[in-house]
Image (cartoon, rainbow over all chains, first blue to last red; front, side, top):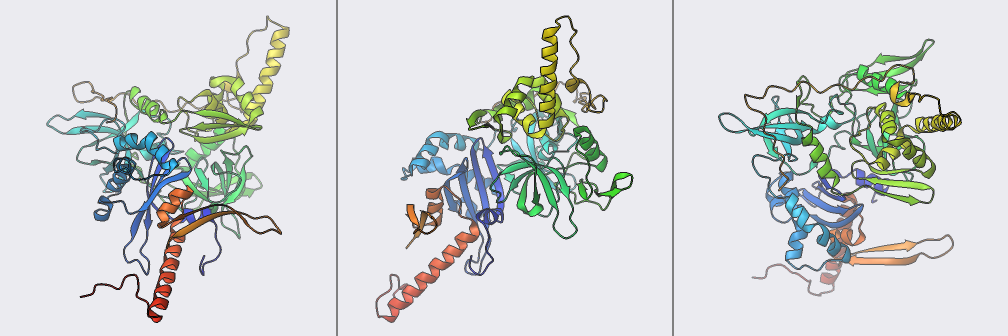
Amino acid sequence: MGDAPATTYGRLLADEWGVSTWRHGDVRVDLVDVLATDDQADGLTAWRIHDGELVVFAGTNTPGLIETTTDTTEAMRDVLGIPAGLRRASIRLTNRQRHFVDRYADLLEQLAAFPARPYPPGTRIRVVLPDGREADGTVLAAAPRSGGGTTYRWRPDVADLPGHPWQHQPIWAMETTELHATDILGSRTSAHDESDLVLATGAVVRTIDDPRFAVGTVRRAMRSRHHPPTYEVQPHDAPIRPVVLPIDAVSPLRPTVWPTLDALLAARRQAGLDLLPRELLVTTAESAVVVDSPDGSRVYPTRRASPGPPDPTVGIQPIAVPAESPRLLTLRSRTASATTVQSVGTIRLVRDPTHGDLAVSEAEFHLAVALGPDRLAAMLARQPWVPLGNLPLETTAALAAIHVPERVLATSLRRRAELSSTSSSETMAEQPDPETCTHADGASPPPRPEAPPSPSWDSEPFPVTLRHLA
Amino acid sequence: MGYTAELALVASGRDAQFVWSTQSSKLWQLEAALGWAIPVPVQQLLIRAQRRIRTQSEARRLAAGEPGRYSGPTT
C-alpha cells in the first residue's frame, strides 16, 4: 500500500484505532478514530453498523452530535438512531439495509434512549473511582439513599474477566452513588492499549489473519530467545487442536486478570495443564517464567506486571445482590439471539450468544451431549477460566469438547464400560462418578468461593428494582 | 468521480474474470454495498489518490483553456 510494506486485510483492520464498540445480539456498532493526516487537519470518527460479520451502514462523522462532542456515548447514541432516521426520511436503501432496518431500527432506537433515573438494572455505567480512575460496569440494583439520592449496586466489567476472583460469583457487586455514575453506551476498545500485553491462561483472543480460525482461548504464553513470545491457543470456531501463534498474530477479546501467581498456578493445577519450560506466567501483580531444572519445572518470578484494566474490586468486600438480578439480566441478554446448532459436514457448529461460534466434530459433540449437563459442568469447572452459568446443553457440550476433549472421551469410555457391566449384572450397586466427585489426583475439587454473608443494608430491606430497560 | 469495487476470479493461465462490481461516490457507501469494512488506512490512501487525480485533471483542463467545474467565488 503506497510505499509501506505489503500487509494484509486483517492486519489493516486490527491496526484501526477503535474508540468504542456496542453489541446487542448479532448487531455490532464500532466507532473508529480517523487520525489527522497531512491533508486532513482534524481527526474524524468513522462508524460502522454490522449485522453479524457484514457491514450494513457506514460513515465518517455522525450527523450532529459527534461533530460537537468527544463523548463517545453521545456519538454511539447518534449512530444507533441512524437506521430509524433513514427510514423516517424515506432514504433509498439497499435490500440488505432495508432488511436490517425492518428488523432492528425500532429496537436500536429504543436501546439508545436515555435510561430512566434511578438507573434500572442492566444499565451500563461508567463510575469514577475514589482514586480518580474510571471503570465501566453494569447496574444490578438501585435503592434510594436516606437523605436523598440513589445508591447503586453495580458489577464492574473486570469482575467477569478470566482469572478474576469474582468471575464465578455473579451476585457479587459493589456500591456507588448517582454522583459517581454516568450511563454509557458501548465499551472502550482497548486492543491498542494492550497490544504488547502478554496474556495468560484463559484469555480469549481473536486472530488477526489466520485462515484456520477466528477466536480461541490462550492455554499458554511461551517465551522465545530470538523471537517474540508465542501463545498456544485452543481454537473455538474450528475443530482443531491447539495451535501456536506469535503474540502479535492475535488481539485480546477478554484479557486475563489473574490476581497472583498462586491463583494462576492453582487454576492450572486444577485444570491439569502442565507447566512447560520457557512459559510466561503473567498476573496483575507479578510475572514469572518457567525454567527447566533437574528437579522439574520451576517458577521464577521476574518482575511486576502491568496492572491491566482498573480493578475497583481490589480490597473491597463484595456485597451480594439477590440472585434473581444477574440471572434476569443474563436471560435478557440471551434473548437477543437464541443458541442455534447446525451440522456442516462432519462438524457441529453451535452459535451461542455468549460464547460465539463453537465448532466441534460431530463424534465428539455426540459423546459430550450423552454425558449430560451435570457431568459436563463438573468437567468444565476444572477449567475455572471458562465462563459457565445456565447454558443450553448444546453449548456446554461444545465447550467441553473444545476445552476438555480428553476428559469427554475418557468419561464416555468409562461410562460405556460401566453400562455394559451393569447390564450384565443388575445387582451391582451404582458407583459414584469420579468425574463429578474427585479430582484427577484423587483429591476433592476445591470449592469455589462462597457468597459473602448478606450485608446489613440501612434499616430496611433492599428494594431491588427489576424493571425492564426502557 | 467515485470508487469502484470489483470481485474477480483469477485462475492460473487465464485472464481475471470479473463476477461482481459496484460503484459509489463515497467510500462509506462502498463499504455498505460490499458488506466489508474498508480499513481506515486504505480509505485514506484512496481519498488521497482521488484528490491527486482530480487535481491533475483540473490542471490539464486549465492548461487547455477549459473552464474548471468550480472556479471559486466570482465577485
